[in-house]
Image (cartoon, rainbow, N blue to C red; front, top):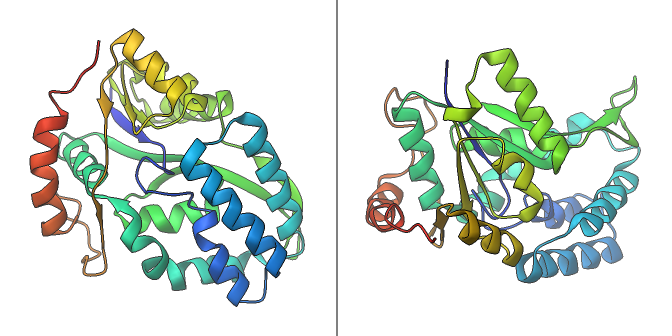
Length: 260
């Protein structure tokens, strides 16, 4: 059977919340008011310092759904793609890029799995060379506008179920696959695979990882992808030379770090 590597997105592949990273652009485009922008900034600060638990994420999801009600899906997708390089390029972890390339070289499929909206996750993933995405979906009406309701929420146990479904459809052996996440909310996903890894873990997840002997990885080096050449490469997915060079050293150290 095939093998795969499943990467959480926020604080695992990139250094902040992918959704909140675009709030400034939404404000400039006239889609967010000052109060909404301030709340988003405060939410980002709390996310970075303390992480986010189930209730916090549920409130953020519901608030975002109501905020986007009536927005045109095509306009949001266009805005994200137009501003992707400016917003996300400096936020990507070099270590994550190296790991992604490592799995691709080993012949594994790589998935980005995120509770963030697909309209953000998919173009961001494609930007770093990943086409397989599992992300949350908002309900769209017949006019292509958001209804304020959720169609699929890829979070917690639901994220694990979505991965199980894909694995069954694609003939992927989860026992031989890998998963990476920073949050204890992704324990169902990490427990689903034979090779779980925690990245920049929150306190609860770090304690679980230490107890179970899971590898603990610290991603720190953020790289700019402004000069990245976006074309498929058979053995190397296209991470910048500088990013790989720096990550090679870091990866050599990280591979030996496994806390009991």
